Image (cartoon, rainbow, N blue to C red; front, side, top):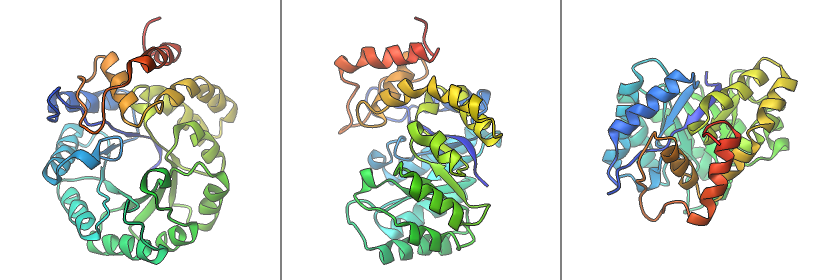
Amino acid sequence: MFEGSIVALVTPMHQDGSVDYSALKRLVEFHVENETSAIVSVGTTGESATLSPHEHIEVIARTVEYAAGRIPVIGGTGGNATSEAIELTRQSAQVGVAGCLIVVPYYNKPTQEGLYLHFKAIAEAVAIPQILYNVPSRTACDLSNSVAIRLSQIDNIVGIKDATSDMDRARELVQATADDFAVLSGNDDTALELMRCGGSGVISVTANVAPREVKQVISAALAGEWEQATAFDAALQDLHRVMFVESNPIPAKWALQQLGLIGPGIRLPMTALSQNLQAGVRQALQQAGRLPV
């Protein structure tokens, strides 16, 4: 159901931290024009952890409105309380998302059986297509392959965003799940490797600033044009790297500001990109052809 180059969209903000909906509309148009496959609204990159529940749904609803059926929108609706995740998922379904991306509960470190029951409860409560999101570097909790494979048997759990960069795990997920279960990379720098294992695409941070270029990599891979995909991917590796010189989405938001697409707003405890790192990010944007030299 979900494949290709899917952007993990930033949430643009004014200097005072309020959401900049004019800039959000501009970003949606940018991704429609550049043929991004889908938008994830209010995931990690969208600063989900610092948006209020009301803002969370409002940003998702506005993204759906601005997309106007031209590009699928996936709502980021995970949380570390099952009841909260169910409510966010239900409200996102009501505003018209194509599916939801649901992160592994963070901080409280549930057991593997707790993770199974958590995702099962959300899937049973809301019939919308759902994508699991495993990012142990962020959550301090790792969804095992065995549990992910069990969950893949639930009809409306349709994929997983795997951000472990472990290709053995990715290969096992692809081989042990149905053909229509999407295994998506959660890491730009290893996305092509995951696709060689049979993956369906990427949920990308880099696509915020280079959507057409990331789409070229993934489309070539899906077409089996591996030599071309490898060349496209090699040209983006510096850009992938600098998107994480500080915590995501700090570099991505700074880069988008340089492209004139958003303002400088970001919410504490996140801060603006450190000055000593700015030249490196700018250089990577120039090398990728996103800024003039």
